[in-house]
Length: 186
Image (tube, rainbow, N blue to C red):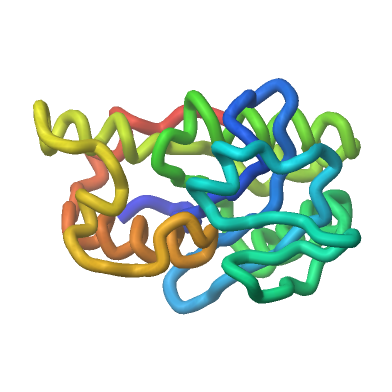
């Protein structure tokens, strides 16, 4: 068995441009432990992002599907996330669906911006893109997380997407050798 904690995570963002968008929600799960933070966006939420994730701002308050969400700054969310990762007491592998092209790019950009990169690097040793794994397991099929999970859940909610991804990972039941092929050093 691998000697790191697999932390499944998902970001909901203000848009799709990894160089400019900001995080609205950061959700993560490791076993039964969860992390969830709603974040005050530093950029306007695009119409496309709203259509996908249901987040919008009114008078400085973040809403998702008409429900106000308690928010923190992105710096506080990153600091809290680091505390969550450290609490696992072992090296971490962060796993996300489309990690390489989206989630890790945004996370890395903001970790550098808020001077947290090296603190994360001390805890997070690897990341893994489950989209690449899915393409190996389900070639030619849909690669959308909701389709892969095969059941209804609150998609595009960061914490629920992370939980769904963890369940999918358990179902795939890859061995350590298979996992090694997909690990990317942080």
